[in-house]
Length: 397
Image 1 (cartoon, rainbow, N blue to C red):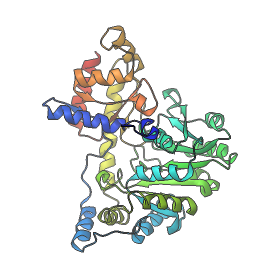
Image 2 (image 1 turned 90 degrees about the horizontal axis):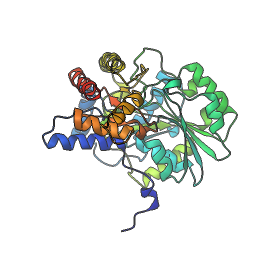
Image 3 (image 1 turned 30 degrees about the vertical axis):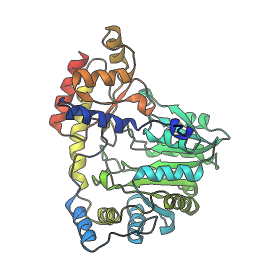
Image 4 (image 1 turned 120 degrees about the vertical axis):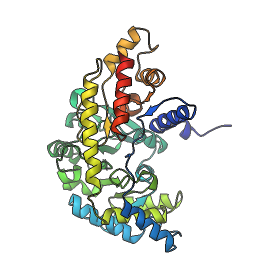
């Protein structure tokens, strides 16, 4: 059987693969702590679940408009106005089956074969593969721990060529938790102003998982002049612990949003009707459900960063947002290789070693375009984190 070049050019999502492997080992009776999944370990708030139940009971279980029900789109417009100071019309908003579908639709709507997509690394695992599906070329710009995992204006300017069509920025970042300041975003915006043909995708999915209390800003807050070529991507998955409900949304220029809707009409059609009602309740309802979750993430973040930095061979920066730690393990990898405990000096070998000898599932940094690192999610209990860090420390001793 011959598979398409398109599917052969991409790989399975590494984070989902690690989570599935950990689940298989658990099913076989192994004592495994999985730190791969990027989802809050809190339940969806009750008022959101109640809204979904009412939708079911009232028979709201049919097809909806492809791009989302009007009341949810109005709630998204209001959310952008209230929280981000951004003004959109309803025809400039689309609701998708998760944030990933919105990104997929965006790429297919604007990219042609041979176009280039600038992606700072470390990057969320799907950006590069989605660009490849659209037959575009990912241009990966390495932004290591030495620069706090953030792209510099000089790097951005050097990466842009006559073929550049799209630039991705993700703040707070998955996998690093790094957050761009307003001044840093202004500097990047000045570069982008010099290249009016380049479209911008700002992935704000972790906007509300704020570990420092510093007000959230994105590139449009820094440079409003970029609004006519920027698509803002967000969703309810992380802020409201609604990963399984599969609702993401995007706002941007009406022609791009319409093109995304056309694509969606030929793929999934509308997002689930019941989930849309739940998402509207999340955006319009009380927001105090977010604070306890973020408080727990802050406590766990402080713990894991401190622990990692006390383990020889690891170095971990404090994050500004999201619920991940991304330690630099290059020294630990070199030590394990020198001692013959791993055959190859790679983060993939390290991840296999930690799973087999420590019973801890982590995601190799190379999955995010950063060889020599690994990512853990601290969206799990403090007890799990304490046990997992003990095991990692013992495995690397």
